[in-house]
View (cartoon, one colour):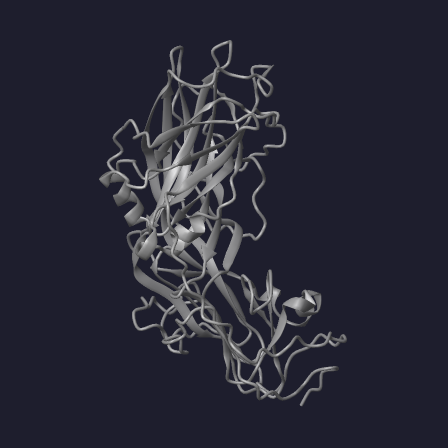
Length: 488
């Protein structure tokens, strides 16, 4: 048996780390309602044979250098989490500034529903949910009525109790140039006994700050067909740059506030009114999107399930010219998928990301003002949608480089814990996986956060190897808010 300096070789303390009472049914077999896909290296499935051959379970690989002491063994599960009902009407908030960051005070902000876009591509004038005025610091807030119209309530019900809204400003500079800005916000409208996890999360969202920029695009821009191809771009934990281009060109010299030599960054426009917005879908396409991952190093196996309901929050990309994009605000997608997908018992020495197909829309927002009509654009996730002949889910990047002795040595000591033999740890609530880049849709990189819940979880199970199983959280304690569980 290989002896590792400073390591315990046997453990008998049981571990069961859960955050909700939904541990029942989270055994090592595949979920009863999971959708199995063809067993290949790119497509996970029941009985998959893609895992590499395990190393001997009584030998734990090391790089030969001295390792730090282990974290504590957790001997009792935290108390089961409960969903505290929310009450009262939902309030959404944000901040608008000029291009130079100065507050945009006294401006009219118009709120419309994100999901009011006809699938047939027809053009509509969106429903005005309400308006707000920005304060002296550019901040604004709007409290929705306690009782919504049947149409708005349907949008919220279909999205897990969350009404996603566009908060837009339109104003013209003295020379007639249109200055616009759009934020995306969530209203948690499910209250009382109908309270949902999504509604609770929406009420704790941090307000975004959005700058207005000149919009001079008078002709609709359509994404090139090449950008519709599902790319193999790797997901990233680091957010994309502030500005990006759909064709991959450098944006280093791009100044969103300068048009034909005129700098509008300090120009205060009229404060709203007189402009009529319409919108329609230019194109829609399915892209495989990274929504989670699992890790299993020494004598462990990994499982991940994303069951029946989208439980993620996306960064929304917006553009005033169809060529340069930035991620502005976030919206939650909580609508029912009708499928459970995931993987079970992969490992040891295995770690991969997991992707599902999501339909994205490239939406044209036409704004007709007294002196001219212009276009702005947004890329919005809509729903789980399997493309014709496509996989219901698939494996993404190999992320095994995040496991093992070196990452363990470099981890935060406070985030470490020990997984006893034949026990498992499951993250099922109050935590999230964050990807700065989860997908490239229409050539533009979007961010994503996946929330854990009773049916959305990451799990790591220990075997009976002779040496201890070390785990640690990506962004917090295993018993707190780890985000992702890494393995050594």
